[in-house]
Length: 232
Image 1 (tube, helix red, strand yellow):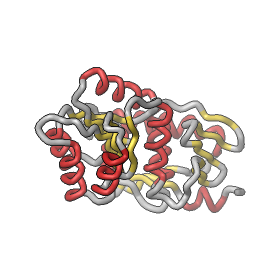
Image 2 (cartoon, one colour; image 1 turned 90 degrees about the horizontal axis):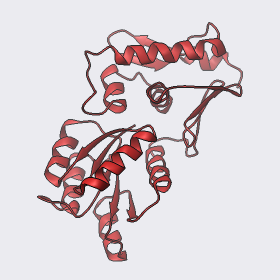
Image 3 (cartoon, one colour; image 1 turned 30 degrees about the vertical axis):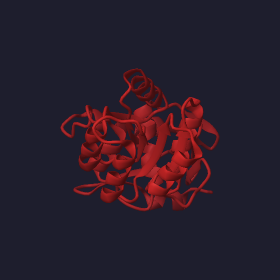
Image 4 (cartoon, one colour; image 1 turned 120 degrees about the horizontal axis):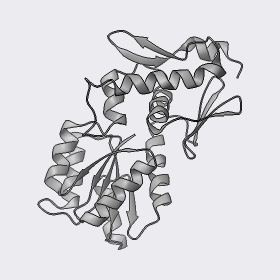
């Protein structure tokens, strides 16, 4: 999933970006409120981690600006403002969650995952399709209890398709949500390389069944046939 970190303090911003990348997120960063609004306007993010004490435009005003553009984007405030009144203002203004600094990174990851799951009917950490299971907490993939070792990008492609299993996902959308701003190059072969590698790793466990289908001119989807032919 693609996350925007809005944090003006350099050390904290670097720590957040590096930490989230280790957890498998594609991460962009903004150093002030003005840049944050600019990035939200031009990029497709799954979540925003927003500090409140920002230069140029205060975090609450940034929150209002994001909500005027996008009512559905998940926003988690991460701030040293720990008073109950600050939390109430943040949540009432449109934030989906509020985490006070200092914080534990595992809790931040868990809260982001919880926010992202709210868009889907399935509320727990397990996503299933046929006999394939994804544990979004552990970021693991199993087929009939066989664990499949995937790279972060391979896992992210599969997870995103699982989360949108009832529709065709455009190639550009997949890239925008899985690669960060500096790497989302539609003319690169990186996406196809990762996708083909993912298919090869799954092949020994799913046989000749087609799991991921490319509909030319539209994008990629999980095949209905795979789920129908697989014993649940």
